[in-house]
Image (tube, rainbow, N blue to C red; front, side, top):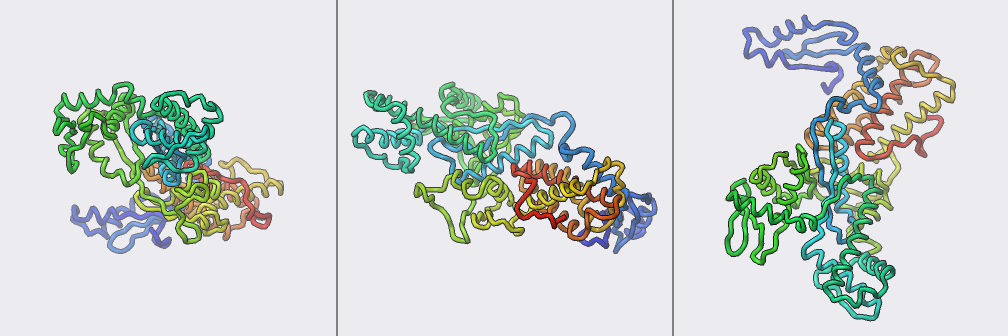
Length: 526
């Protein structure tokens, strides 16, 4: 119940049963309440209104719930049984034509945190990054690098229309020139561009890996579009679809019967010029994933890909893919500074890179802020607000709670307090409303984690972290931890320990650090 006077738990079971009974709901509630055993876990039971049953918990429940947290330690809330299956989460998958920009940051944060949540919920999870390293965009990238490489040796060249203009292109060309000098000049233009592309892509992928590592995003496997093309997988999947009559030829092109699977129209697999579409490669990639034995395939895509979802799931059905296909779509992020929109990079004049964002706000603030909203809601990211070290900044507020608890525990040691084993510490003495509220909040982690995994919603953990921090701050304001009452001090120190533990677990799943100290923490805080 929202109001504490209505109990710790409440049920409307009597109201639900009344239509199937000859008794009115209030009478049913009284019969049920009379049969609920009162003990130190359920202290009293009250009937309210037309038949609500309100349960008031006793000190036995507080000790039991807090003991479960402390006994489990850093495994609290995590699945402890056999694995529930193998999943793959594909995340980021930006083209290797330049550094990661801030537009990919939310994809990376959601994908990595979601993988953490699914692992904690009992799944074996593989994180995969898929590079689109073939097609016209890569040709333009090669021509753009060449246009910055040739002038270094006195040969005029212009970046092609629709090419890549960023300063990073010039940097790549400079690195290649420094390593190979003019050795690429005698090659014919096609071979030179192929070599330049290989060099540029290798360096770009290296930078992407470094940026993701800095952003605390783990990638287990890296796959490329070129691998699919060279293996014949794209030709094979088109052949399979045609043989099963899920694809047909029209106007010199090959179409997938996407409309038969709920899409608004059929989709091109092979263009009239013989080139495969991105969708054809998606189908081949889908089969490649399924062959690796995953039970579920999770894609993290921007909302602008919403039109692809039906055709992808349709292709999975047509191809007999055994794995479940799930797509998490996320909305864009609006970046600002002090309320003013920020779209351009000071260094390149283009979109801000993820590295530049990390330079300004760091991985903690960036990841936490990008995970504060449901993926289907846009995020307002004000750099000035996010970096503000005040308690109205959610990430600072939560980290401050963790650091404050660490400070309390250090002060206890400094004062010579030796913690007894938690199961001998008299946890039942925790009866103050803010103590009970804090224990109740801590005990919710397993349910929050389960619901976040089921709904593919890692943002629920940021909300939970803030609830724990708020409950702890209220407890700390009203209850002195270190006092002359040695027994109560022991119980409250264990409550602090459990709170620190739960905050650390939650922040860890979000990929955010749990600091042991912060500048605002002082000796007078205990």
